[in-house]
Amino acid sequence: LKLTSKNLSQIASQQGDQKVQIPTYERNDVKEGIVHVGVGGFHRAHLAVYINQLLQNHDQRDWAICGVGLRSNDAAMRDVLSAQDQLYTVIERSAKGSAAKIVGSINSFLFAPDDREAVIAKMAHPDTHIVSLTITESGYYYNENTHQLQSEHADIQHDLANETSPISTFGFLYAALARRHEQGLKPFTVLSCDNMQKNGSITRNMLESFARLRNPDLAKWIAEEGAFPNAMVDRITPSTSPDDIKSLAENFGIDDAWPVVTEPFMQWVVEDKFCDGRPPFEKVGVQVVKDVHDVEQFEKYKLRLLNASHSAMAYPGQLAGFKYVHEVMEHPVYRKFVWQMMQEEVKPLLPDIPGVDIDKYCNTLMERFSNPTIMDQIPRVALNASGKIPQFIIPSIAEQIWVTGPFRRLCFVAGAWFRYINGVDDEGNSFEVDDPMREQLQALAKAGGNDPRDLLSIKMLFGDDLRGDKRFIDEVTTAMELIAKDGVMATLPKYVD
Ligand code: NAD
Image 1: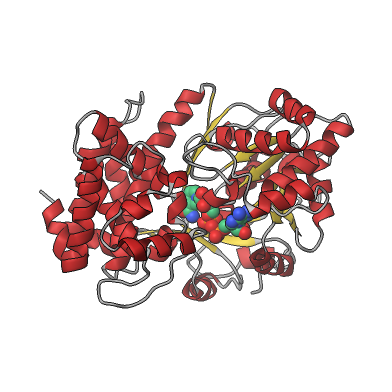
Image 2: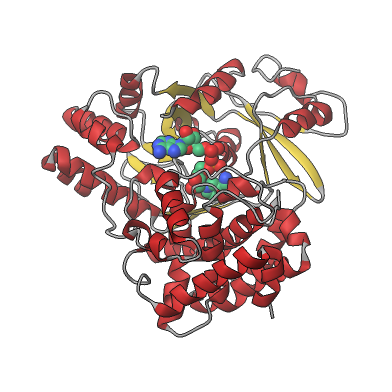
């Protein structure tokens, strides 16, 4: 049955062993309190699911979502959602089986390239209280070295010159906030749900920098009146495959052109800092915390353990020809490598969080990575590495050097990334390198061969801390040479005790 509002009750009452949850709240009687930029897999498996629960079980009708796509490839999402009355299916998969839930919290969708003014007007509307973001790390134009906005970036330059037809997230946020200020409204909260440590603070700093370049008075208003909660977000959400669409039709009788597949686990720790109201997130299991340090500690666990392990599987894994994360976990030596990297090189650097058992956290991660049913793709985990490695891997190396602790495995991951940049695996097969800095990276990787120093000279990614550090350079060089000579799988045992 095609997924539409009209067919919902029939979908729910279909005979079969598999039950489907559907939204039973009145979808026409809601206000769109949240405008979300970047309606990809993660948003649809995370924030939109929490909001769906609030609408379904807690009658929170002011908080439906208006999705926004800024990039040309978001046209596909616009078309799929509009043909399905903005409904889609979340398929939760674990070793125990699958569950399907139809989510109705996205109420409308605006595709910016069609009508940029409509997006600005929507964000500026008094009903909008939160603008949330999953725009990937590269959407923040954040220079890791200077911690400043990449103000020379062509998108930012474009938006500084064109207030009414922006292309970057900051251009839209600025234009909408300027309008709210003019109309005497409060600013909306800008809520980043991207994987970055201090995601709220980075969002605040980048937006304020952008605003200062246009109008310092408005920048001041945003700084004083705005809110940018920091948040740690977690739910592994692979890209949807054609098989997922087919199996949803076969097992649940739902014809959905773009369902989302995810794991049962979900977590969100968010700082309680909202300037224009918020939904009662606590009611649906979100950890809303008063102290920003609480978020930072959870973020650190997530980025340094989960995301760093993902990187440890992605770059060497791609070179070794693995297709899925769970396949890496099935390989005993590789599994041990990931475990030992977490336990010996990352765990000692992490703070104690009251009520969290770090070994249990690591064990749960190993279980989640091993889930064979969600088929998390190595290329997905690998993409946009220039936004990931400097956040997930490099800080642990730098800290280990400070405390003279072990960091060889982390350097192996960095070295594997440097080889990965060439786009050729250990068998000589080419693969696509999906990274906004690809051209620059590939030129430097080619010039440098097994010498990482050319790549490490990209200050924006690596700063100055490690660039001249001999111990670091030697470890990365060794890893690159070993991989070049013997390949990842023959090298890995040298990194496992
Ligand atoms: P996706 O590819 O499904 O969607 C990405 C969305 O971001 C698209 O709508 C795209 O148009 C938009 N986007 C990309 N670059 C942008 C830019 N420069 N400006 C504005 N919009 C931009 O990816 P996803 O799985 O939804 O992941 C998105 C982000 O969510 C990740 O980068 C990460 O920070 C966070 N996240 C993902 C997961 C996961 O498991 N997928 C888990 C935790 C956090």
